[in-house]
Image (tube, rainbow, N blue to C red):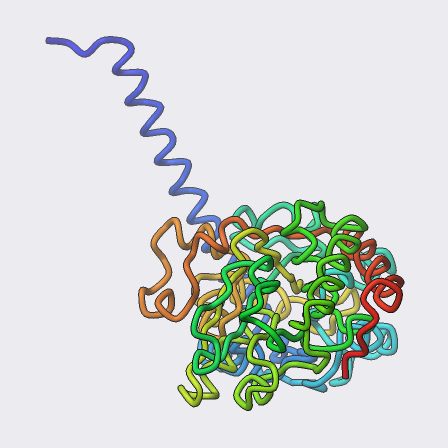
Length: 372
């Protein structure tokens, strides 16, 4: 029996699609080969502000060097902040020497700023489509590399029932137990913890989350549950601050460093999974632009993304890779449940700025605790 015209058309379309996909893959492979050759000809990549113990960057850098041995990685000022990175670009616009960074890794707010100043250039990696739209510049000037979510770090020896959400912290059983990681008038991590608390009360990220978050902390302080001490792994272990709100990757690293002494839980608040994002960009004045692009391709490949995950930072492609079964079970086993990250909220730069203004401007009046 002869095939129907419809069946023939469908088969032809399928064959054409397969051929198109194959041609696209071949073109991409050719482009990558050309990029690698150009990068090797440059022979060097200059990075800045990448401490090896932050998000697994030590392993990521070693992985890049092992894959591309013809490229030397020049590491500038690993302890620099985001503002320092932008200043390094400004100061070396006309310098093609070793002090001029090719790439930067900065807080979310600094990406748009760098673009506005003309400090960075656009480049879209091969996996561009798997980076969430709300954490990347449409033109490819900057895009999220990894993120953490606000969580609670808990000393299990002292806290028998872990709080599941912000509201639980108001219970009498958590008297003199809870702390932030710094002064909420100055610490970005603390300011965004207050945003998370405000969101747990139904507030939208921005001014509303700041105001609602301050209301929550005023109640927490009045109840005697807030400890005005900057929390860290040592204060958790010593029992000075048995519960601390911080980025999950910090808490998970602290958990490992404590090595069960005491045992520590990491819990993501059930009502408000707030993400804090860092972004990558290539300097508009990069001395080694091809090496910079190859670095970006590596960071956003499966290998690069898993490198950050080993350091407990959720890579930008985490949701897509999780859905595709690309994340090893042993890595997932070390993390809180994936569904907590799938619903993570990524506040915009404007929302973060509005929240910050509300928190820093209102903390003294509304809460009045002096965190030290």
